[in-house]
Picture (cartoon, rainbow, N blue to C red):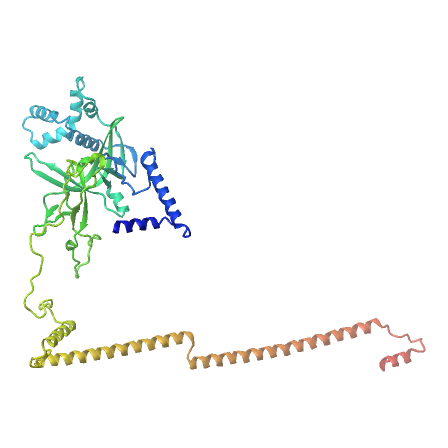
Length: 488
């Protein structure tokens, strides 16, 4: 019955007009059938569904970010990269021993280390000269015999074998870690050896129009001397980032590596000394990192299944392989979690007192037992200490709050004595200014009166000069003079 109810829930979602639910269901169901028919039978249609992986349909390499073309000025690095490509080619393998035998015959008494180094430096040119006159060589071997172009292509990110790889410089800018690699090799005795490292540069050598080989230039950790270490107790593989080696073999084919992740081992963090200052700025960095890896998700890519050989190409590294029982066996103690090798704190005393209380609880049918005298004394001491501590804390808080209040009030309003002094100074200044203003007003009034007197005197002088003196022959002269004297 449940499938029918579930399908009815799907049909009810088609309802858009609640007044006509049956018609809405019929229309919605018909539209869905038409869309499914078009998706299945009409070509060149991309249905909207679950997002596909960017690795879907291919295992070959593809550069993603940071593409640059540059001329390689380091001939030694280019020779090493070319020798790595030749070493990992099955077509070139039959010529290795032939060239080494020639070097041994031409240089008798030389050690194998010298033969190996000379083989790496001269094998490319020897192979090119050796195959120059051979017309039966396949095209791929002929292109490998030629020296690759000095113009190489570098990337900061590369996708291959269902994984995304970054350089260590790009990894520092990214949130995820994609620069760790693992390379499985076999020694001359057939023993499997696993190398761990991180990508420093990503190269792509150009051997022809349609023949390009991606390489990873890596830094590898030493397998000896503590560079790579396997924990015997928990089975974890740990690496030391400060212990690098194999500088003469930095290149590896991109298709032959697996991706790993390095997790910081917090137990290997160096301790800071109290009496000495740390000189190095990297003292807080962990010395060791734990190696973790995961299986590639390539099922369904290029018809791969979980039983394919490529699927099991990179076996998963188990992160933990515990050989001992990590559980802690508890003894028949009242409080097994309490540490007895240190000074007891107040919390430990409280827990012991609670346990003693639980131990001496009276149950029905049992005789009551009294706790020891030491427990009572400890309980009283703890109570008194807690009461004193709370009282002192409250007093300190009150004093601090009072001081803060006084400081705040003092900033906002000055004390009474200061206010009185300020008011007295303001009154004296006001009185002094008022006296100065009155004195200035009197001086201005005196100056105005003096100027007014001077003007009157000048007018009198001018009036005396404008009137001529009377003549003596004039009979009316005395009368005029008398009239002038009387002001008429």
